[in-house]
View: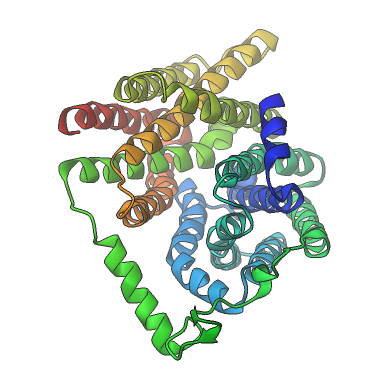
Length: 427
């Protein structure tokens, strides 16, 4: 934390970066606002875990499909304006979900949430890049990422805690109101010194806007072609293929665990919803530590071995959770809860340890002229994995039980470990 504060002081516009980073946290909080209350939704709406998983799948499909259009709109309408509208839209989707009287209404709310959420990364990351210099962009992006992790870790405590006291509908309303308050704070206190955040982008030459600028239809078509050309500028090598598949598997695993961790603890081990969300928080808090610490280790140790070790540890811990269900989850006493907390902390650390290692390996293979296209393809496979995870393991949970589905994610971990081994051979 001291290192983070030290770097934050060196940022060119710390208040703006802080607000953008907090908005990242709000966005990530909203992206996993349903998993903490999924056991309650399953009971109240009499739905299956497959249907519950589909709620997350719909969100991430919309989230990924609309990111490119959102970026184009942001260039024309202004990034700050689109960011604020997106966060407000996500808050509105929670109000719709809180009043839902049917499963179909929940699905509609998730469609709205996904479309609204798709505006965030094309605007938030661009705003950081726009207002910071080359010398401070790295530090600013580090703070930006940390803000997102805070939001992810806060969801089970915030939503789960309110839901345990007042019900899941009240929890969604409180989350929506909190987001709207933040939107107002962001609107008042964010001040772009150059005014570029609210100014539509133009293509200029000596201060004159060309007819084919970004604000015209021809300009948008030209830019779309340029983006496609940039995506196809690198060679599809075996290394790129393995990296893309590895990214898909890592995202699939993460979203499956996020979606069904609480359900596993409640329906599989018989724990209370409040305790389950507390353990979910432990897992996410450990994940935040792993993202920073293992990312640093990736600069000093063999990355392929480090990734294989993280995936292998995930496999062992996830496999061990099956035996907790066989034994009834322990006695339910303090010692059993402590064991669960340790297991979920280790699980979060190992699961998230795979991501920074994988990203470091991608950077090794990304040249200056092809990095944009490479990361574009990788992010697309990540979105596909995020959509598949809740759907695939939701089906397994429905057919075999959530007590089987959650430990079965270990199969994906095995494949991830194999992927890191393959990278060492083909790279």
